[in-house]
Image 1 (spheres, rainbow, N blue to C red):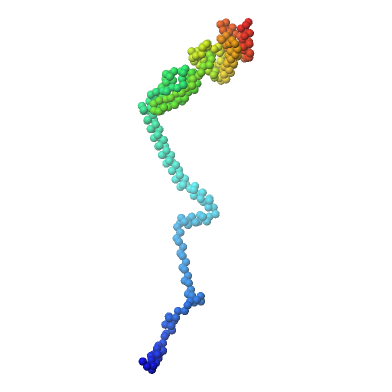
Image 2 (tube, one colour; image 1 turned 45 degrees about the horizontal axis):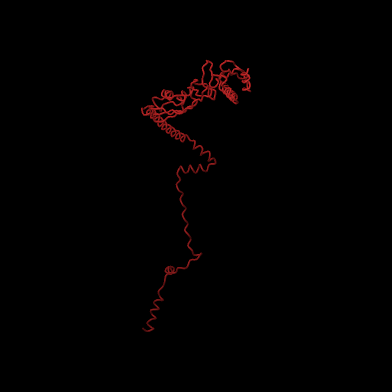
Length: 298
C-alpha cells in the first residue's frame, strides 16, 4: 500500500469529534480529600416503644424516696392477703394431718394387738413380783399404748418398800418395771408401839421380819413419823445412833448388845434402856462407852 493512500484515512480519524460527556465518562480522576464524596448521614434511630410497666419502673427509680416506695409495695394489701391465704392453707393441711394421726393412734392403741400380756419386774427383793404386777395391771390391762406410766410409777412409790421406780413400755404388749427398794439398816419403834425397819434416810417402813441381820440391833425410839422437818431430824438422829453403836463396840467387850433401846426424847442427849432390866441410863451427847460402863458397874 502506498503512502498516499494512508493519508486520507488519518484525516478521517482526526475528523472524529468526542463529546464532553464522553470525555468526562472516560476520565476518572483519583479522588483526594478535596474530591471525596460526602458521607451520607445515618438516619437517627427511632426510639423503642416503652411499656406502661417499664415507664412506671423508670419513674420510680428516678424518685428521691425510692426506699419508701419499695416498702409501700411490699406492705400492700394484696401481698398481705396472699400471705394470709397461704398460711391459712398450710394450717388447714397440718390440722388434717394431725387429726388423722390422732384418729389412727386411738384406733390402733385400743386394739388387741397392744393388750398387756406380761410385766417384767427387776430389782425387787422385799416386794414380790405379784404385788408389782397387780399395780401395773390395774392401770394398763386394756392397752399398753394407752397406759399412764406416771400413774403406775406413783402407785408403786406409794408402797413403803420402794424408794425409786422406773416404768417403760415394751411394745407391743409388755411393760418393764425397775425398782430400787429401801434398805433396812436399823429397827425403830413407832408411836403405836409397832417395830418397823429404818433406811438410811430415816424413813420407816415394813415390819421387823424384813430385817435379816441377827441378832437384832438396839431399837431406835423417838423418830418423827410426819411433818416438814421429819426427814432432816430423823437423818440426824440416825447418824447419832450409828455413832453411839460404833463407839460402844469399839473396845472389848462390845457393849451394844447390853442395851435394848436408844431413846431420842431429850435435847440434852440420848438415853439407853439396859437389857433385861428396863432401866434407862442417860448418856448425853458424847463419851458413850465410858458412861455406859459406869452405869453397868454401879
